[in-house]
Amino acid sequence: MLKVADQQNLTNWQERVDMAAALRWTARLNMHEAVANHFSLAVSDDGSRFLMNPNQVHFGRVRASDLLLLNANDPTTMQRPDAPDPTAWGLHGSIHRLCPHARCVMHVHSIYATVLACLADSALPPIDQNTATFFGRYVVDENFGGLAFEDEGKRCAGMLTDPKVKVMIMGNHGVLVIGETVADTFNRLYYFERAAETYIRALQTGMPLRVLSDEVAEKTAQELEDYPDQAEHHLSELKAILDDEKDPYAS
Image (cartoon, rainbow, N blue to C red; front, side):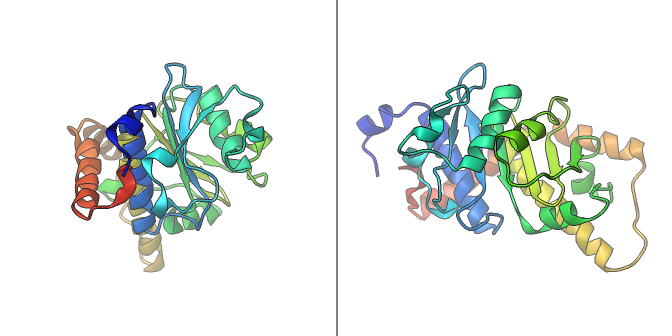
């Protein structure tokens, strides 16, 4: 555990703690991909300076002090001794450079979201409360072009310019979720995976789906957006569990 004085030498300590908690819980939920996938969080007003998990470190081991502090506008980033994963730099760096409203970015290859992304039609119909949460709030990337190096990252960033869009279903790839804070984004990531699982399991029955009307789906989505402090309480409770277990995430 870092001493208080050491913590104070690292900027954005509380944001680091939240990021580490979200990474560890994503691993516990089996939504990670070995030592791949990345979360990032802007810590400057213009969004260009951001925290991100280090290269090739398992989500379940990342500590608050491990997070990299990067500048999306620094062309020498990949020359650093602690350089980030090149695909993470290509994707997250491009988004933080080009989409300042995307304060937090979480990209995973979680099972059900990826299954959805592999369907010829990757749309998520509103068949329950969780799926309705994302009604009109996602975009489907139909043009996967390989690993997310600089060019692919820029292309993906170009699909996130609409502030209403909070989720990118990355065709043939996975899912990317954006939000205002770690709590907001992690909560959205969690519920998107639940929504995708519900839809995939419903398809597996082979029975007709009960799809909500556009009006009810939009009403439900708005009601959930206005639901008070759920995301913050969700992350707070997860950190409390980690703290009870004396997990070193906040070190």
